[in-house]
Length: 439
Ligand SMILES: Cc1ncc(COP(=O)(O)O)c(C=O)c1O
Image (cartoon, rainbow, N blue to C red; front, top):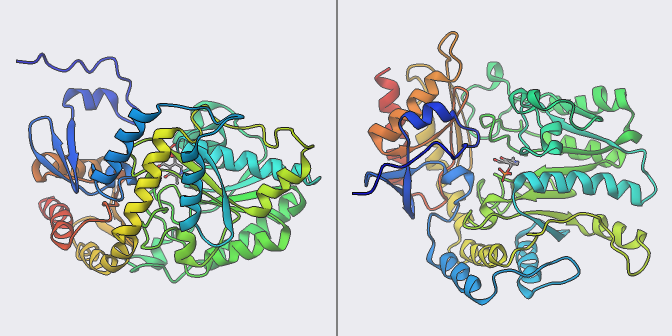
């Protein structure tokens, strides 16, 4: 018999370590829509891992590509050197990016992607001789990873409060969640586009547009509980940025790669930013990778400004365009295209919406928000115990129903792999419904 697992040395990220270690939840294998636990149970994946396994687990084409590349060449530097897969992966990503976004900077995850995009935005203005633009604008309840740049423009107190003053010149828009007016909206909420006006009327009026380098938003705020942009909101943000020469960055770390039924949320909303940050679904999470996709004009400003034969952008990671990650990205995008997974998500979105909203009226359900294959179910908190009610549902789903969900505060967030079928959607929402009914 194998000895019991020693759990003391691994300091787990974003986890209640002491609580977890009293009764570990362990996955040991994964295929398609399911995990297998250490005690041999099948768990339906309602969260695509962490919003990342969009093509389903263990896709053979992606597995093969990584195995082949690992055997052929483990690593090659991309500082003053290169390997063909780096260039191929960039072209492949551009082939599904919105029109006009055609230059790609690789990194290793979403947090690095965000910090890369922020640095690029600041440097872009500077290389054009407009270095007064040093201010960045994010949004309350925004999540942009855990780098110092990302927590600065992000709007989550818990992620910021322990780490002292981060970036100095940052301000935040308010988030557009308005349950009083938009509760149980199906898809895009009707009310709240005017929240975008505060970019111009409050923040630019206060700081002066000439000091602002970039605005960064998640088109749909995922991690803090599925907050959707009201109808017309993103269009207004785009127009204000255009009016004042401010770069618009979409953080599409979770909305990228078909989550809304289109390659990117930018396509879904018909709003094209100057930069897109992506990660997660880029490699189906099989190898860590992130990327910043930028408009050619942004890239060209760097090329035009630097003297010949000199480095144009002093930034990069040892593992930028790692060969294994590139192999995984190329294979993953091929799978998305060949299996038409974005279209499948679009088709299944209405069934998903129906299934989600069938929970309206169950005990403690305060709001349900959905778009594409994303859904947030907000529950009434237990007085004095924020987050406890949803976490209890999470535990029961895992131990009693064999279903993986995710919670943030008292909001259940669902984002299954795009391959989910209707029976599995019924199982997912049915599990949550039966637990809520028994409350
Ligand atoms: C919108 C957004 N940006 C950035 C990140 C950070 O990505 P990573 O955890 O890969 O650093 C996340 C992670 O969930 C995210 O949802």
